[in-house]
Image (cartoon, rainbow, N blue to C red; front, side, top):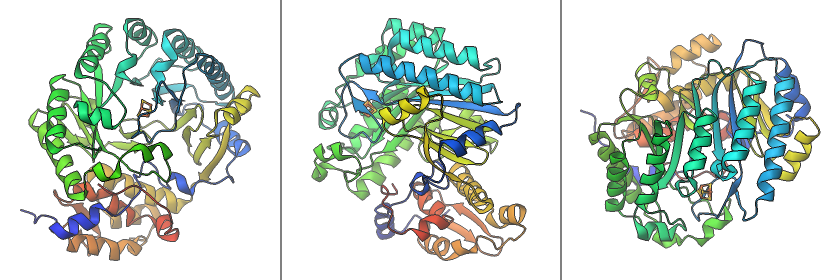
Length: 456
Ligand code: SF4
């Protein structure tokens, strides 16, 4: 049996900050050196038989939840949605003309609230994608939905447009927490959205929950997890609220004194995990849960789980094309990010250009470190010596991580076999995996001033 993480150390570690490692290098390291011209060259160089994943970002919501960490804006009028749809159509057209590859395996709509597009705009866009790309081997077509916007016409359009998986933002089902985060959404609204989606034939449902919210108790987290599992989704995710008011200024509306402390956050994450595992779900990576027969649980069991900007995924396409303001894409040469402002993005795509304004070209070292970090985040272990030998010819290539790994080993967060160069997270240390991943992050060490959310 492994020893628990030392209690005093656990609190100190939970308050340390670390990137979420949805990419390596992480987005703060992107620069303007990668612009639209560079990105267009990378896209044009794709092999014609490369597989593609599309991510479409819709940066609008009907109101802003105070806890929100997304790139979005509240709108009341319909005109911005019409203009945004027209610009997305132009971008679909521009990317399809520039990309030699057509074989799309995954589509993901995120935001903001993509369901704000409504049935007609959504179908125009889904139809344009189907006309310009080859969807004959698509594996998943997923969309993030606000349960408050789900109605019969929308679910019919989603089903007609080929959606196979819907993620519903639930967060917490207790009224006092919903009031504290500016998002009133009683259980019945969530249950009704699930019922409508299933009725339309969209059987794969994800529910997204949160812990660490203002005024949220351990009992609230358990009760929400229990009620969410009773809706029988195929996947759930539970994310820790990231309080970053210096970056997301609307979070200043949250009473910081009502936020659970580090010990409470650790207990809440554990309570959610225990509740969902008891309900029959398999824990996936840091924050996901899936039914044992879900493709994500199978991918984890087979060591094929991946991590991208949406978190844990089964998506292993050769390239990710990001559409919409602020979207991030991944091409074999590196990461690219669209203009964050809708005006700058739409002007570029309407001129037939890619809207990329920043990114990063990957070095061989970035690729190797990125692979180590991804395996650690997905598998909770990494044979970093063997991988280093394969990738660089030198088993000691990442020994700059030794001191940090040893420190985490002393706190029983992980077991570190120095001779074999193998790291395995302990059961109790898994919530701190971002800190272990950071040991391999040479760019983070070089820029010690970057601010990230807390590790748990
Ligand atoms: S609905 Fe989602 S994206 Fe929109 S403000 Fe709320 S949390 Fe943010």
